[in-house]
Image (cartoon, rainbow, N blue to C red):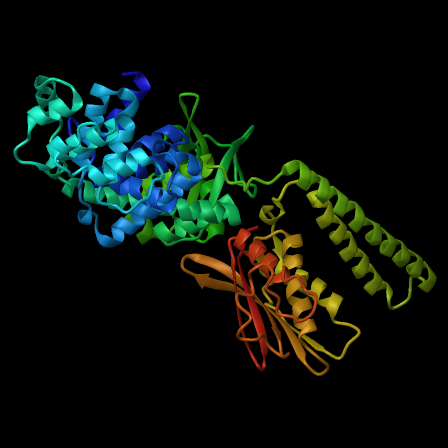
Length: 588
């Protein structure tokens, strides 16, 4: 047996016992968790038991049985295996049975003995016994039609029919007619006896109690991987890690450090000291908690995240037969949560395992980069033309009005926003979609006043400002906060009419778990949002009538969540209120 085949055989068999249904599902979940991309291993594992093979055959009946897998991509096999495992889990793993598993084992051995070219087809055909799956192959149809006939009536039948019939006879009959089996296949009775005595025990002899708990754990990890990767593809890896930390540890206060030329950085903070718990975790390969070690620099970072207690978990991946630390995640936790986490190594291992997957999985969506890059540059060029024209008109108007004119402040605000618009458009020029995650901090009151001033003119809508006098600082780039406010205030203005009021409110020191946030509210007394509008944060869903793209609120949510915040709203016939909650910077 070649080395690769031997490795595979060991992975799907335990000792001399063929894989049970639970064992096969567990093997598939391990393949899923390891992100194995060898399609042949997936196919071999799926074929090793009827419970995993039949759903794929039923979904897309193949023209040729042994080529069934050609109708599926690797991702189809992965997704189908996970779906099947979840379905089995709902019914209970002990609901699986090994009917015709032994028949298939005998068929495979007989095929190898008589005609190796038919061995795999014989085994797969045996798995179809008793199942209504139509395969447009006359030999397979005959085999499934006549497999249970008297052996003496099958002389002259196609070899596949005789192989399947003998395999079925030997697996279900208490008294095996060795002479008739040998006669039907033109081999000696000694070979039949030898083959049957060398077969492993029936599946019923293989216990599943030990596998059940491992199956549930592996399924939980696979489901977490699946949901985490889906979230990372929709938003970012950081957002997926934050959601994972929230689910496993009950804290959304998490940041990821990666190594650079001078140490470890999370874009907001740079740690160069070898004594930092981040560096300690990376070099020791083990999680490091503040109960073991804490530098002043570590403490400052944790305090800015809302707690003095934390846990640094290194993320290692295998590359060129070496283990490399690609990142260290730092979680800010309450003392009680840290104590629970420290006493639960399996929980920490699970978190690290899924994070490792997020750093190795392909998170892009298969975009045609060249075509998209060309289109983006074309749009940028076209968008910059009218922006430049308006900026020129503003300069001319400013000169005509003179430096002392009361409109100069408004013109300056408009020019500033046009410059920011050009900057946003231009940021796509390098074909990177990372602006939502750019680090930064800003004074929330100052940005609120700036954006509010752009809309607080030329209409009968009243603007009121209720701003926190402590002037809190939020952990978000000022341009991202400006974009959030622009979308929300623009929506509020468009849904309001003369006499209505728009309120802009800020409040700091909002405690959520162990973390401190700033709450920013935009309220209006307009017409409200219809109840049947759907999820307003989904792209394409617009709260306004007419030709609106419905992108604004989707951008608001994306930018807010990228800053580790969240957005909520309420609306009725008396108006609408959107609340943006973003982490507050404790120390500058």
